[in-house]
Image (cartoon, rainbow, N blue to C red):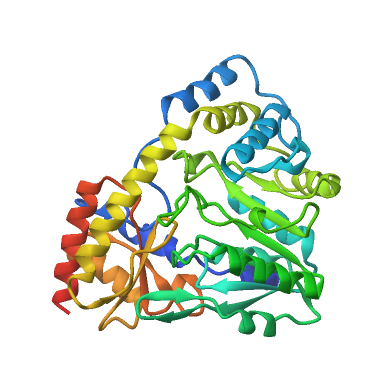
Length: 389
């Protein structure tokens, strides 16, 4: 028996990331403009770095609180009061080793082998992999796409709920589509969950990256009652340019506290305390930095979308939220091969829509949280490529 044959079938079934494939292929190429991954081009700001480095130099290098240091959980409570107008005690918050870790723990807490989790597709592929590595089945509901816009069919959503369903996963604003649920849609999704006695896992990592009315996207916090079966997964990565820190959080009913603490203990045993000090600084003093990131995202979104829409070969509208243009290009049916070809021919790196599951195969994803000048160059290169097809 070979080494691979002796491994767990579940581990062997874990898919290679289609996003990482393009990154590996293109990394290091001269003149490349990378719009492949969901991160900006600004490093973490000094005030966050200093808080972490001061704690590191002060010796905060020991084992720490499994749920997160009290100061960080209290800072999360303040953040939600400021941005979501809700009063949640620190007992609702749990610090995780990235947003990915938060999603994995939520799936572990709610599903067992043989259970089902319904999710909206196209979707960040790690959601599906995290669910299925735990033995549950991820059931996709493709969003509808017409005239450049994405929409949710609530009747189709409810039709996918079966006796095996334990949760509905909702990412809004969406990676990769930019689809953003209205308050009314969130209330309707919550009503479906109530009728069937199931949970909602709400990924609201892009809630503040909202280009419509209001200072943020609608949230399940706007429509739910206290104690409802909703778990929120989030991350420090996008708002404060902290992707490499690998710190996230969960918002969950306090009754789940010991269960989540146990899951943390047996996965990563907690986040380094000095990193958490940087996260406190991000929450308490990072609103101005986030506004800088948001302004760059809005400007670059407009540059990229306006340029590509003007080719009359790209079917898309400016996204309502998040950090991505999900592009359907006339003449492209194999997004994986197209992504590799675009790297070679015009030195722009995009993520193939095929990496994002059902409904995504004909699309390409571009992350626009970058210097608007660089995005303009990338947009012009892409327009030339598209017009040459």
